[in-house]
Image (cartoon, rainbow, N blue to C red; front, side):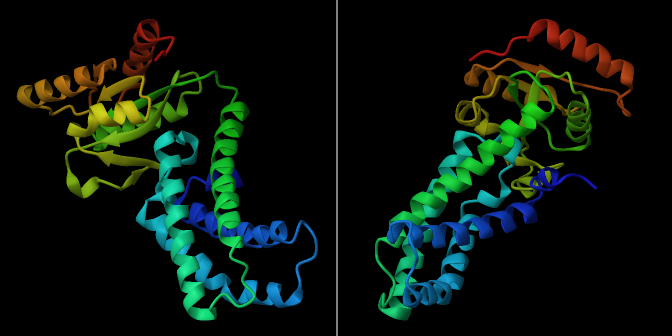
Length: 267
């Protein structure tokens, strides 16, 4: 069984964590509203009464903006933007629902912005904190950020190899694949982000340092198209055509060659 922090990579664990944080931020907002003192019983009772609405609408917003699908160890500005949008929407809809249900009786209006600010801070802080903890715990130096083009068996095996290699200089931020059915799916906790045409945009948003193309059956025409996308992104790229089975000798040689060429990721 992995550690608690390992479980944070799973979608349901993240979902449960975020629901808990919504509750903490909600009562924290009341605490700040009453100057870090005791919350009057009438307000506290109402806070508990409307809590299901707050949690429900925020979870709906998290799902809509894909917050729960984010992989904590690769938290980026793209993920943080989704968190901010989801909190704004969730807070607004929650406030409207509570107004309809209670006419804001014993619900101070100031708790809504306070809740939003606390929630953003807790959601972002926990994700960044986990990423820093994980990188420090594994004793890794600062890594470059990598995209893998191809979410099939080759990309899957490449990811496994990179995950096992403690000395690799890169971490996989996401997959790219033209199969629309795979978009949004996760492979070993890493999300399939978009189609190949999105490579330039994603490379910029996610601050990518290297693109690996892991599609052994790629046609010459398709290879040319992907090359153009990678060149537009202005990011180094490599084609991998490993043999079936991914022999250790092949990967060992690839790592050695790769480190010599891209040993110091830079922007």
